[in-house]
Every structure is written in structure tokens, then in C-alpha cells.
Length: 400
Ligand code: NAI
Image (cartoon, rainbow, N blue to C red; front, side):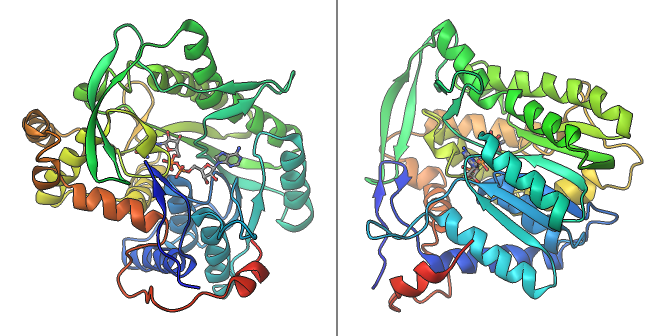
């Protein structure tokens, strides 16, 4: 079988397993040549480990100097008679294979991170086969729904503004077009639900349950990822429903930090750079900003993908040279510093003002945006033979 990409709007409907493997290998090779993490965590749990920042964290911690054993939790689909499965499914498998070659433990749990079943399985595994203690817990879930743990009813997030609607442009990757759209304002209920899904509640409940189970090591750290962004994106992100949820996440870090003090542990939020991931392409009216940002940061030699961001996060901040993790006046770790540099943002603003549906692929970095998106799903990776047949039966034998 030859696999050709199927994209609907901004969603990839399939993935290329050989390309996913190549993408994992490329990221491993990158971190191996970078400045290594010194005194990094050895036993790590990553919630949301199969793609984007969570996967890059896992690769960085395993191969970028710390040689960490990792447990990854993710929600992915394997191959069946209806389809090839998701990129994250293959990322889990090929990461594990590469880690095991290095003698590292890489355990994958593919299931709902919100369910008590998954939590129970993870805790049993930590106690019975993972040495009993975690040094670091990374919370990198990105999702649109979360069940209420008491009633089971689903909270759904809404990516909307708060206050005024916002009209802007959005990329359609399927048709290579940019379309005008208006982002509506959220109701109070939508704001609350988005906070429930993408805020800090679930992070708290994971840390509490791990703490009660006695599996957090002395000095255990926990990290979650956030975005703030530039002023030009405030109406759709920072001052919108997602930003509100992230504020809740930031407050949660402070609360967890106090709770973890009793085991000399810490909780932080790392504010990351805007990047093309499975989750971020959903954000309406955000694409002109990324097109302009990529263009400017690449021109200035400052562009980073998830893997570059995570390697810098761990070497320079979390396990950096300072005795305490460097933070801003809100106690946030800033790894979005290069994105928010004034000289970058001045040029980004100028470029955004010029971007239109007629010229976005010429003056913005649409090529870079689309290539990143395709590569997230295993397509368009240099060196991969996309004409080589893929055997579905052997793929079905692969287990996470
Ligand atoms: P992603 O879509 O690449 O990864 C999300 C991960 O969550 C995947 O591993 C997925 O399997 C997992 N997941 C989703 N629902 C799950 C469930 N019910 N159970 C178990 N696993 C589940 O997303 P991305 O972009 O890496 O986002 C991770 C975090 O980084 C989010 O908090 C996001 O807000 C933050 N972030 C993202 C930025 C971006 O530009 N992409 C910028 C700054 C922060």
C-alpha cells in the first residue's frame, strides 16, 4: 500500500509511519548534538507524550543528556480496517524502539488521561516496574473535551474571544487558501467550560493522586505548558477563552508549588513559543501571526521548533546553571523570550499588516507552516521513500 496524505481543512486524516519514524530520529539526532542537560530528571511521566511539546520533552529528556526513563500517556488510534491510525500512535512506537535501543525504559499508555482507569494503570506500573518514584511530571495535554470527574458529563472548550468578536484570516491547509472569519464572543458558560478543559484542574488532580500514591520523589518537579503571545494575538488568545484557561493553569502552578514544598518539590508553567502542532492549527484567525512569526524568526536565525524549544527549556531553565529555576515576576518560565523580542515583534507587526488572502504564501512563511503540518503527520520528510509500499498487516503487529 502507498500512503498519500489526506487533509480535511486543518485536520490530517492519515499519517505515514515511515515518516513518523524519520521525524523521531531527526529529533533524537538534533538533541544529541546540542548542549546536554546536566543533572536532569531520571524518571519522568509525560501526560500528552505522543506529539508536539510533550513528545519533544520526552525526546529531549531521554536523548538530550538526562537519559531519562519515561512513561508517556496519550490518546491515539492504531491501524484498523478503516484507516492507518494517527501519527501519535506511531510516534509512541518508534520513540519506544529507539529508547530501548539505548537501554532506556519507555512505557506507553494509550488511553484517556482523564479516566481513573488510566491513572490506576500508571500508578501500578510506577510502583511495580518503574522503580516506585517520579522525578518529573510533565502536563502537556491539549484537547477539546474533558469529562466532569463527578458526573461524567463532558465539558467542551470553545476557542472564542471575551468581550468583542474578532475578524481575521485563517489558513485552510486542504485548499491552500486564506479565508476571512469572525471569532465570536464566548458566553460565561463557554468561558468556564474552556477553563475546565484547558485550565489546571486536571493537572492538580494528577499531582494529588500521584502524591497520595506516594510515587513522587523528594524534589519532584512538575511542569505544564502555556502560551501568552504578542499583543497582536491577545484578542484571540491571551484575552480570549484559551488565555483565561491558561491564567487558571498559571494560578494552579502556584498552588501546586506550595503543596509540593513538603517534599521539596516545585511546580512551574513554562510559556512556550507559537508553533504549528496538531492543536494549534485549530486556533481560528491565528495563522497570519504564525506565518509572519516564522518568516521573521527564520530570517533572523531565531526560529525554533518544539524540539529546539524543549532542549533549551531543560538545559537553560529547568536544569539550568542557576540554583533556582529562572522565572519572571509572575513565576513563569519564559522560553517564548525570542518570540517576544521587540525587534522580532516590530517586524512581525509590519508583515501581518501586509498579509492578505492573495499574498500570504509569498510574504508569509506558508511553505514552512504547511511543511511543519505535513511532517507532524509523517509526510514530506526528506530521505523517506514515499513510493515504497507499506504493509498494513505488519503495522498492525506493532504495539505501543
Ligand atoms: P498536541 O496536539 O501536539 O499534543 C497533545 C497531546 O495530548 C497528544 O499527545 C495527545 O495524544 C494528548 N491527549 C489529548 N487528549 C488526551 C486524553 N484525553 N488523554 C490522553 N492524552 C491526550 O498539542 P501541543 O501543541 O503540543 O500542546 C501541548 C501543550 O502545549 C498545551 O497545553 C498547549 O496549550 C501548549 N502550548 C502549545 C503551543 C503551540 O503553539 N502549539 C504554544 C505554547 C504552549
